[in-house]
Length: 284
Ligand code: SIN
Image (cartoon, rainbow, N blue to C red; front, side):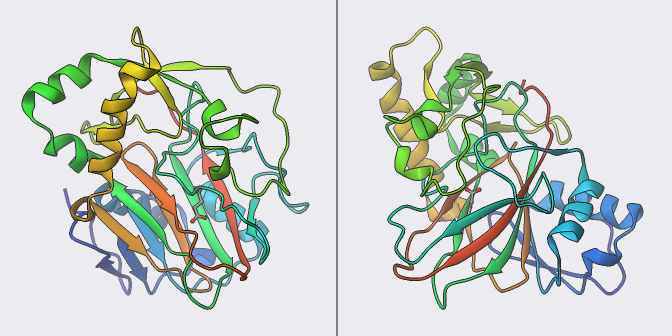
């Protein structure tokens, strides 16, 4: 169902697959009914890019708190001013970018974050876009037989593939200038491969190469071809949107039905983002 309109605010689709720019909204002045409108728009579009925000870290955090319960991200030190705001920084000489692999945030947790907010603080002159994939559409594009098989499978999800020192995709954890070693992240958790969104009731592929080690009961070697196939489908342009950041853009995405990928195409330049995650449910 389409979100009701909000006076003076325009929603402009980012692509045919997902995402909308939000124009004319000042999140510093948002009240609870505005936040409810934003949440409804997010359920419809899965990704929102609110343009032109003038936000100090504390007001970014206050705004995030209107959307749900903020959580501490286990793998990075937050900024001094606020325990929920994590800086994502790529310095000109860094060789790795944080989030440079298709993933949904922290699916290695028992209750992974429902939403992520990212505020563009300092951007390269060009590049540094983020790609997003509509994981409902990925699921719905599969043959009925594969959908049925995947719907019965569970997977082993672990932080080790990205955050472990010898992880297969350790480069996607980025340069580790803010890294901290958490003591409360489970070694592995079991989640379904196909997730039913708790608010829309729609099904989406939840698994991904970044954090899904294997299908439960299968070896990793047996699981990888199908995980790689799903990763390939998620990359298809038909299912995606590309967010070109502007200074002051605040993006919000729904990790329960979206995967994303940070582009590393701005060598020698600096990019600084502030990130907050919002608590979620145990996937079913
Ligand atoms: C992330 O993966 O959460 C960061 C994405 C980005 O920096 O564009």
